[in-house]
Length: 405
Image 1: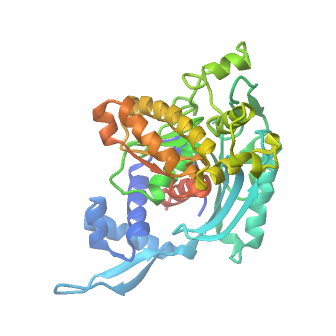
Image 2: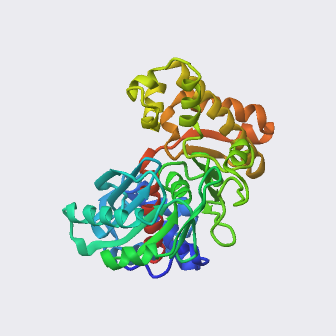
């Protein structure tokens, strides 16, 4: 199996759509009969049988035990052959790099996590490549069956995944990575590689691996700095892959000016400004356990400390989280009115703050969004947490493999 061409660069043929539909039904529902596949996909039984027979010959699908029958011949069940191929996924998160190796049923076989560099720079790319190489080396599988690598990174990626621009928050200069991420991975690993924006990967991962089949329109809020948009079950990338970047910025605007407009149109910090707001409150004399966590050195304060303060119900931390939830809730309310999604997933790391953040977001969206839109939108935390991006790019590679089956 070889990834011939990325799904995101073209319209699927009729055969590819059928491949994807049938194999998704088998992956999610197997062991399953051909008749039930036909019902789920709404393809006729002859088409399903022909396609399934082809998958069996290729070793992608295997026949299992006979199903229960109400009379007549018992139908044979089929299921995905998880060992037919393996996929590597590497995702860059707010605080970590996560790498996974999965089989075709998306069972995680090997997982490695590393703390990431605090800034977005070209130095991050070789570290991600080495993480992928480490995962492959550790995995006790037939390495020749690794069919693809998925890479999820923040920023605006060109249509071929060859260069990337990382928009920075609060008036800082954007960072452009001129070397090809795709080529760097393929040279080092000699495996076909797909590169995707982190929020786009996460929204597809949440839908494809977790949510109900009937959900067609959803948004994944990657902190407050970007979002993945799913329309009619497909990622919406815009004209050249820049869709989903939240916030405007000008190189002629000062950092102070950017800060003042951050809760409105401006770009945000990954942590929604929670660490900055906490420091400001502490410097004004408010008491908090956060100061004890870092031994009085506020320069050492991290988002992990905010999460800890939330779990330990530190009063100052809860105030900071409440403000962040209100700010993000207003931004989500705007998006809910604009796109009218069925589901809004809160992810990117901020969901670790738990109910103190999520409850405020829900209340704020209900207050600020149109009733028709807010009553439709279900707001939930990411099902996969810091694994969402890595599993999302794995899902993109798997869909490509299935489409070309």
